[in-house]
Amino acid sequence: MSITEEIKNNPLEMPMFISKTLADNGYECYVVGGIVRDFILYKSIPEDADWDFATSAEPDEVTRIFQRKKLLVIPTGIKHGTVTVFHNGKNYQITTFRIDKNYYDYRHPSEVVFTRNIREDLARRDFTINAMALDLIKGEIIDEFGGMEDLKNGIIRAVGDPEVRFEEDALRMLRACRFASKLNFRIEEKTLLAIKNKAENITKISAERVRDEIIKIMLSYKPSIGIEYMRETGLLSYILPELQDCYGVSQNVYHKYDVYYHSLLTCDKISDFIEGVNDQKRIYRLKLAGLFHDIAKPVTKQEVIENGIDVSTFYNHEVVGAGMTKRILKRLRFSNDDIDYITRLVRHHMFYYTDEWTDSAVRRFMRNVGLDLLDDLFILREADRIGSGKRKPGSVSLQKLKDRILMIIEQENAISLKDLKVDGYDIMSALNIPPGPMVGRILNGLLQIVIEDPSKNEKETLIKLAADLYRNFQQTTKT
Image: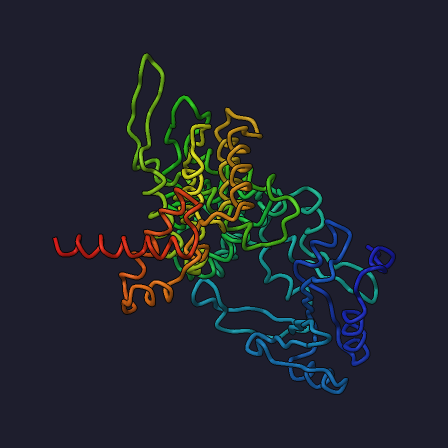
């Protein structure tokens, strides 16, 4: 397959230089990995693409050749034959053709043998769609395992014996689910059966590796594809047993789907509200919140049938769910920032605005939720509504609440401590008290007063109120 014309407008100067330099020194060189797959699918190569090369040259030969060209070369994975060439702020990984032997921990080979045969190198890879090589100089693609046909048919198929592939590296099972989500492909039957047979091996993989794959699933347009494959193969019961427990748990008359499928649909629908958003952290946080927002419904369900109608309740499921979500994310080694943000979304996703809310009630809502969370909380709430299967986009009440929040922000009413016209130093100076918990109690008391009556957010007024609060707190302590 000639692709010379198709790729002529892509950022190929340095990749072509690497290919030609190795060829001029008598070595084979191919582009490998996801960039080949994605080029065949999308007919383009993005400027920020990750370039991976496979070559018949061994690491010391690659290093010597490019150091002669005055390029920085670092042995980033020398044990596995990988060196990295740096140029203009980009890195290019170059790995020697190799055969992996004796996987010792369901993830890494204990022995790597270099080879001069590109087919042997491609044979060790996970899926046929990732086992192709691109010869930039000839403009040809080497496809020894039917990867192009599988791309055409939308299939995820293991290279060779799938059970051997998953015994070598158990993370590949989760990667199959991730590629199914990313590409909207189906997993081929033998590959799917092998995942079912080997699912327990996923427990041998580090939480950090699993977390990274979960994040990548969340970054796809339709994460439900990957999550559903996880459930079907048994992976979900090992990775997210709490979500597995949602399967088959019916809700009430206001929901079309059980808790599990409602959670998946909510997660998917978030994609429609963040079109054009490039902040990957924000995307995966929101979708994880969508996936976990009802995680506590199975344990909080109180079944109620009235006149043959299911009106079951799930009181406090958002509070219990926030705690469960925190434990899940800690188990998967998410960062503290991620844990805080996602659990807060889960904790606050249940709110019902009515026109009877006073301005102070709106300000208290803003204060409790946090201004940093409001935009994403509204997205989660809309996705949750649509995920019920019985509501359409465009909640009038949510829009009214948004409008009132914008009005309050424009009026610069105090919502957090930093908005008060006094700070801790003002309180300590005016009341002649030392630093300590009392100062915080007074400031929080002042904030509650200002939330109710923004006109009192003036320094002189706040100092007088602070004195009253201080006296009241002292009397309370004495009694």
